[in-house]
Image (cartoon, rainbow, N blue to C red; front, side, top):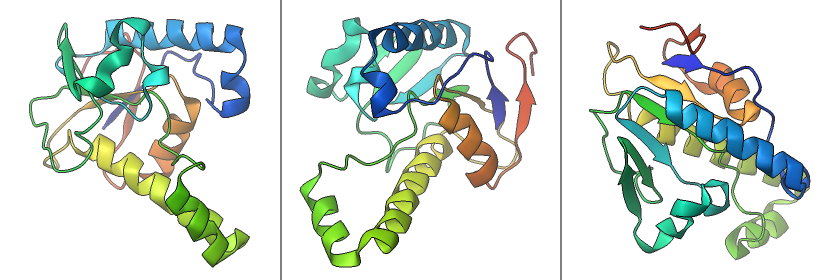
Length: 171
């Protein structure tokens, strides 16, 4: 996994997302990443609000390919994306706390155990999404994200080899 960064990524969270200037800046970073990625590229879509307005209606289609970039809401499980040269995570995939199953689980487990469970779900989803593009130890895939949390978690969670390269550096 080749970790690529612009160097201006910020952690995306609900508090920050409510701020218009943060969303605007996020959009610029996301768009610059999508311009620079090695194609073909896979973008698993955790939530459509992080997409460019032109492709926000993705949930109706589940998958959309634009200029060598495949956006998908359903390819995080059960799909191998062997041909992909890069993967872009729009945001670290924390589950929606408004989900009724999560609410019930929190009630049943209690605070401490629930948050351990919650972080575990997010980490598994994260690994699953980026792992779809890496099928063998010899595969070299670029990893990009406008969310600094994704870069932090890649170093901590990814069990394969990781190298960091500046966007101008080629393989």
